[in-house]
Length: 299
Image 1 (cartoon, one colour):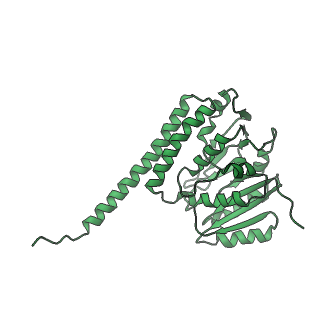
Image 2: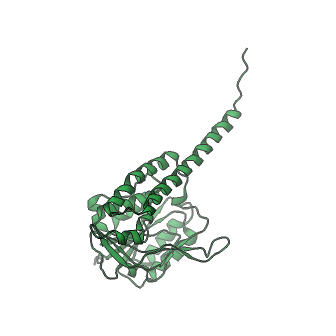
Image 3: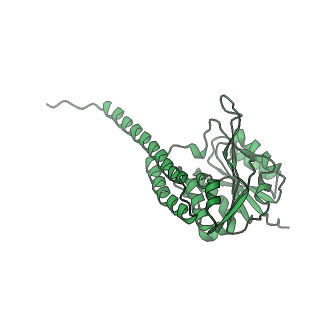
């Protein structure tokens, strides 16, 4: 007998996440909301992440599925999740984070989400495993509310939600993503979250904010997909795409708040600083190589 379609698919890219994957998966298995499937997308780990994913799928048939890719970007892993999701809605999570038991239920409180809506909730920075450990603090947080395109933009300005470019802690309508061809840009490893979220928000008709703060974004030293070295050409492309996107979104929501001017400039300055660092590193490597070259004297 075939399994009924779940209402929600949770997609987790998994790359060298073995030390933390258990806490992540177990936190989802303990959710109060249970009408969901979990897709673990393992791609090219050098630890035993692949075996752990397979074991979870075997222990929880019908709840957990695994996809196996050759080593690829986090964006490719998330796109594979979109392609294979059976849930009406979809959300993303990182393999080294964890969620409190009301995390998934928070998405489905009234007002109920629909095909043209993105639902957002906050993110908690968790420093319990940092060196040294520290108290948790809100990364992003929201008041309960909703905004449809054309509404008074004061709600959008008050929530300041365009600063939150994370793809996690958002609920998307799966078929809408597929129908509109909204996907992560697979060759980018910088700001790919922002560009995906901005693409979504530019095509949706409404935003719903939830006040819950249940996702623990763990701050620790890590070697995951999102922290791989970033080529300068990708940083430049991401900066150029953001430069085009942010004014369009501000105009769409009627936002003229000075904060968003700072946001736009701050993003570009951050990317430009990364590009400068890469440029200096590249120049230094060239100089070091040239210093080792023996040039024969003229006869």
